[in-house]
Image (cartoon, rainbow, N blue to C red; front, top):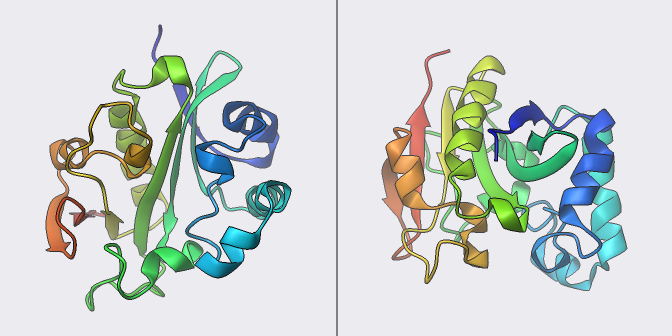
Length: 194
């Protein structure tokens, strides 16, 4: 497999994004909405509403993340953008809740919250490529801090809970642990020179 092209998810790439997420909407029909909608509302929201919410978000812009493409087929996704765009990721009590020096309403504080890969691309290092592009994307769009709450260890490299990404990949990209509210799920940060 060749290295995929990685592009911001703009409205013209919606068909490729939908193709990647498939009829079930990626992880248990999430459609990458888990951090956008309050938990009680999310659990009652049917998959077609989650899908519509995400597609509307893509159409409104700016791009809510990056899409990896092998030819015309999307093979990977990473949600990245300002913390304020993923309000549930900022809730007190979450491993990802913001620290005082990086408030959620600061447009220069960004977060990487989710990854999803087409099955043949899982466990092949695409997370590293998406993360590198995500850092460049955040920097180019005025981010001063980029945060994530990855998983330290999973039972296997293709584990569904790894949708948050593996901590080792973030560490290799220069992220440092700034808080740990739950064992195995550090809050990690990269300071960007803008």
